[in-house]
Amino acid sequence: MPRVTTRVVIIGGGPGGYEAALVASQLGGEVTLVDTDGLGGSAVLTDCVPSKTLIATAEVMTGVAESTELGIRFGGKDALDAETVVHVDLAAVNQRVLELAGRQSADINRRLTDQGVTILLGRGRLEGKERVIAETADGDVALDADVILIATGAHPRVLPDAVPDGERILTWTQVYALDELPEKLIVVGSGVTGAEFASAYDALGAEVVLVSSRDRVLPGEDADAAQVLEDVFERRGLTVLSRCRAESVTRDGDRVVVRLNDGREIVGSHCLLAVGSIPNTAEMGLEEAGVALDRGGFIVADKVSRTSARGVYAAGDCTGVLMLASVAAMQGRIAMWHALGDAVAPLDLKIVSSNVFTAPEIATVGMSQAQADVAVPKVATVKLALQGNPRAKMQGLREGFVKVFCLPVTGIVVGGVVVAPRASELIYPLAIAVSQRLTVDQVAGSFTVYPSVSGSLAEAARQLHLHGNDLVPKE
Image (spheres, rainbow, N blue to C red):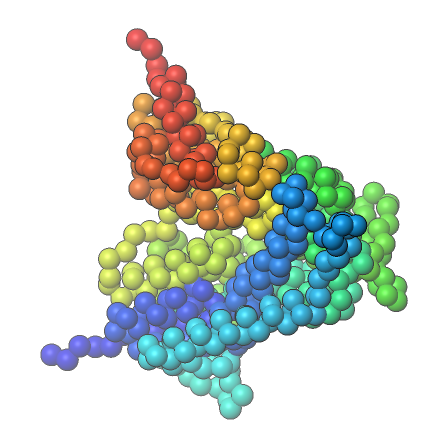
């Protein structure tokens, strides 16, 4: 009896969509991907790849600016400071950013094509649970499907009285059109996106003001880590305005005026809005097909990416589930493993590692400090400042720490935080420990290079051997 091929239609070419397409093709599905903006989605074209490429330049500038402690001098005998002799050509930086994003998108396109995935350029919408209509330049194309995956992502939220013009008032997708460094950049929003851009443009040489509606920057991150970042911002001269909201942003010639809810007005050359995201789920026929949305318009999906409509799955930012490219990709893979009958494990957010690409970076995995503080049984915690780490001293690092959480009795590692340059790389050992349920003794028993910043992770684990025992109830 001939094998029946499963017809898979994916709407959206971001990480959730293209990773799902690769898995579905490998499992023998007949895969069609409908995409509007370019493969890679916002993660590749307007968000992760561009912003982290910009930040890579900012990291170099941070290193240069803080290199005098290492004995670096500029300008011969009559030494000048780095800011006097080094500057950023933002037009060249942004050209590199966009070229790199384009090459990454092209690489994804080639990979999908090599795997036999059909790519349609157009806007996809549902016509019931088993058909997708692709609105292309040549007219509508009807695609019958056994499995549908929605991975349409999200777009920047804007304020009613702060309409971006792409020149002076910008969203994070528009900053790469700038050819000159902003003289004074006002960043509205102190979440991950706002903090990253504030940190980057400060390092690039712009005057930066960060408007935060909360008591501190990065309200969703570890409080100790956020405090380190605020201290760094203060040391570098970046202004943080806390507990205030932007009510309006208006343009006045070559300047912008940001009016706050306390009556103050902040004047700058540019304003960057970083106030959240809106899912791309409108006018797609979702509710008519039985796909449930929450109050914010995000698609409701379970831990194997199923929606409320049979045969329809969802992945990525359009679901509002921990909006990270890595999570979107995993949701997409899980959807196809489940739909096409392969072995599958539900999405487990407790083992997801994430990173804030500020200077220093802030990386986390597993249980947070806030969760550890209320956990029953009590969780053991050790925090070590990097000031005591020999490699950190050699590199002139003044701020940062590692923090590790473990369960009493068993010593199983359940979470961690790293605040340091390249924390995104340093968190990986803790991510493995959390996902594989390793104990602090197993982590401490593994060799680290001397000297290395990762040595502080092993030291924290060694100290937790005793701290964890302190939490064991005495007879």
